[in-house]
Image (cartoon, rainbow, N blue to C red; front, side, top):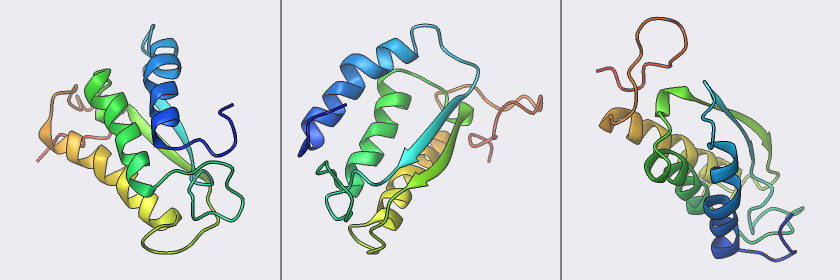
Length: 124
């Protein structure tokens, strides 16, 4: 765990330097992301100081920096108790999904072959 009060730099550094290299050393067929938005600074239970944009940046790290295909990422909502539309969980969810969908539209990952394993986000 990151220390109480950790923000963007500590979070993204740990993700890029430790978590993703470990998780993607042998790339899985599907990456299930348990998106807990209780790390937001606006969250009443937060011990971290993340912004909604930090969650979008985390998705871009997975997709762009590590080349994981967007259509092989599934996101589940797990937490986040700040419901403010600009600084809370809804804003972070929009950032997360927006980064995933934007990458799927740009392509660069595998495309859905109809096998039922992809989401087809790269399809027009």
